[in-house]
Image (cartoon, rainbow, N blue to C red; front, top):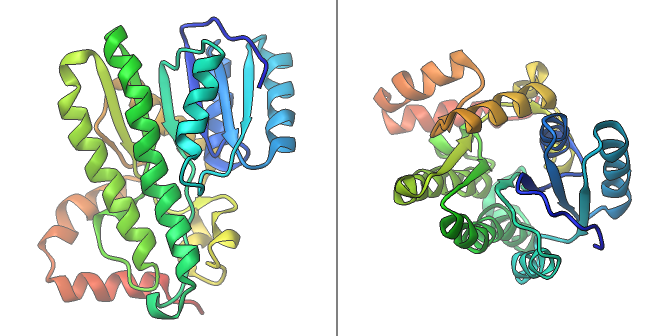
Length: 264
C-alpha cells in the first residue's frame, strides 16, 4: 500500500471487495471520505479503488490480507500506522458462515470462522480504538447479524460468533461513550451477497427474500451516523427479536431457528 491519505475522515473497511463492505465503501466515498480497503482479493480491491477515486475524487488505499491469519489485524494496523493514516471510522464487515451439524463440519473451517468473525474483529477494534480515544472522536460499525439473538442449530459456530459481536459491541459502546466514540452493531437478516454460496446455504428459503447489500449498507451507515447501538434493518425482524423471541420457551426458539436453516 503506497497511497498517501492525510484526511481526517478515513474509513477502514474489512471485507471491502464485495457485498455489504463494497457498498459501505461507496457510501463513504459519496460523502467525500477517504478509504482503506481490506480483503483477500487484491484485484477486486484495486478495481474498487480505481472506481471510487475516479468517480468521487477521494483517496483509497488497498491492503490485501487474509483475515483468518492470526497476526492479520496487527499487520493491517502496522501498515496504516507506517503510512501515517489516522482511521476515524472502523468498519468490521468481514465474516463468513458455514452450514451443517457441528460434529460433522471441518474443524479447521470453523476455527477460521471464529478467527475472522471474532478474534480479528476484536484485535482491529483494540488497535484502532487507541487512536480514537486519544483524538476523542471516532466511529466503529461492527457488522453482526440477527443470528446473534438466538442459538443456531446447523450454523452453531456462526450464530455464536455473531452473538459475541453484538454483545462485544454494546459493551465497548458503553465504555467509550464519554470519549465521543460511537459503536454500532449492524444486525441484518438475510442479505443478497456471496455469503450464501460461500457458506453452503443454497436451498434455504430464508434467502429467497433477502435484502440487497446496498440497502443494508445504507441502513447501517446511517445508523452509525445517528449513534445507534443496535441496527436491525427489517421492522418485522426487529419486532420478533425484541418482543417475541425473548418470551418463547428455549426449545421453541431452537426449533424455529433450526427450521429456518434446513434445506429443501
